[in-house]
Image (cartoon, rainbow, N blue to C red; front, top):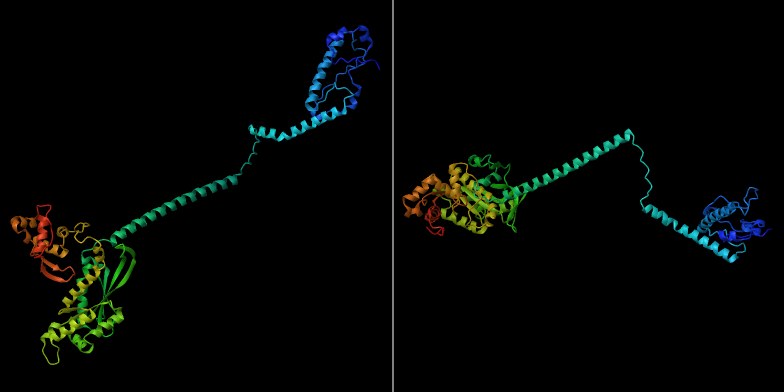
Length: 496
């Protein structure tokens, strides 16, 4: 083999400075024979370039002395440098390494290549993650187009949801309206049941009186008709029982329509569903002859009272005894009859022993009036619980508008302390109008305490019929309120 001249490190000046005789006979070999023994870099990490064959034996190759030969050598060096760079980035492959490179260096180079490749594999997910973080995402697959049936079903579903939403909204609105109406009604009922009631007549509409059987008793039949006529304008219920409550005696009883229950702690009424409540008051009606018989045979009428309480309720039951014709009995004289003093003595002992109340009447009309008064007293009984929870000297400020001129004046006069409705009606009956009442005060200012003194009060506070006068003490209060000029003057009821 001819001598090989290594030109890898020679410059152009070295080539030109060599003797011509050396260049003409020597063969420049750029192909290393030991290339086959070297490990080739992986094909995936090496850029393949077209080889440059400078060892061609073609006759057309330029001679070493030819300037074209030097140009070819320079081009070959530039291409070889490109190959070296590509090999060093992937497998550190160097075309200029000696063929006698040590195995240790070769192992080190191969280890470095494997470590670099493993680092590239480790950093590959990070590179992908960085690529994703830059915003380059995969597009979502396009949804398939809906058919006409699916579109119609979706539209129907939306309409149903909208209709259900509308129904829920209307239901909620109706529930709120019902709750508000219920609260309003409860407030209205609370005010109604706790309203102050002063007139007993207004309570009769909720009362019911139950007569004993009137068949075969002419006096009771007349009393039934008279009482029914008397309370017709107040819409009170009047009924008859089919049997005697206490065998052998005529017993009256009462019931009330109860719409409120009293709370003694709060001192107020609370509305309750309407119900009928039996009053604990009973009245035994008997003639004078029957009374005398009971005095003689029933331990002075005590056994009658005890029997009523056994049948009708506990000992707290209130019992009235109404006798008819006792005055006529006193007028009749005869042997075997009890005297007036004897009868009154037995009745006084009865009252002390059994705590009963006695009523004496001579005519059916008187009996009807007494039953009316007793019914009115029972009707206003529960309303007195409300009156006790208010200041007694304060007038009723919740007055309604009068139906007539007379009714308006009556309500005005009731604003004066201690003037009842019956007293106000007596004043209006005498003076007719407020103008005439003031004219009476103007005629004699010094006698203002006596202007309404002689006005008649038709009923007492307990409802019992009366014909008494108002009196000077209450007349003084009325005069002070209506005609007094001193705003600090004390209006009170003294003694007559």
